[in-house]
Structure formats: structure tokens, C-alpha cells
Amino acid sequence: GDGGGGGGGGGGPPGFNFDQERDAVIRRICNWVMHHCDQDRDSIVLTDAQGTTLGKNSILAVTGAWSRLCGYTADEAIGKDPRLTQGKGTDPGCIQGMRTAIKAGRACKVSVLNYRKGGEPFINNLTLCPIRVRGEV
Image (cartoon, rainbow, N blue to C red; front, top):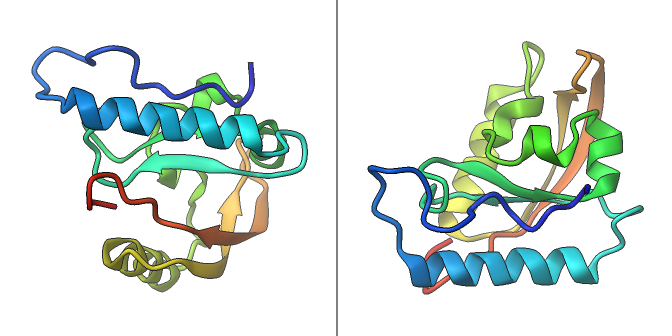
């Protein structure tokens, strides 16, 4: 159902060298957040900025509120790049600011033009909160 527990599964695709301990911690974090948030009201997307869980920067879990806002089901979003909702009008400077904050391990708030699954633009007011796992964001 919506919110899933992550797309990391067990071990991942052949050819990738996964850190199983780190992946287990990430799965526990995803499960904890999804269990403790209000799935119907809190629009939350959890991603792996380091890209080690699925071999790339990817969406690990989403809430039902996020699915309703953006039009993608959890099954459609999990495993995809977080840029899924960006489009031609998305400000590259805003995106670069988010990347800079994440790499520095800092939280930030931004308003960015995103696009729903059907292409409809909307202003997305985001709060990004990097989570460190074994010292890495």
C-alpha cells in the first residue's frame, strides 16, 4: 500500500556492492518514519542521497499524502530518482541549493515548482532534513 517500507529489498541487483549493515539501518529508519508519521496528512519522501541502497539516488518510501499531492503511487515512485516531479519550469538554482544543503548535512526549506504525474504544475513547499547513517548523509 501507500508508504511502503522502501525498495531496498534484500541484496539488490547483481553487480552492486551493497553495505548490508547500512542498508539495514536505512530500512529501519524508513520503517520508523513511516510508522510514526501521519500517512494521510504528512507528505513525506525518503531518499538515499548516497545512492547505495538501490545503486543510485532513489526514492525509498513515500506517504499516502505525498502520493495524493503528486499523483504517483508508492509503487510508481519507489526506486525512481527524486527528480521525478521536476520539469521545465523547475528552478535549477533552487535544486542546486537543495543539493548543497544535503551534501553539507544541513536542513533547508524551499518552495519549488514541481509537476504532478499528469504534468500539472504546483508549488511544493519542502523541508529537507538530511539523516546521517554511520556519519554519512
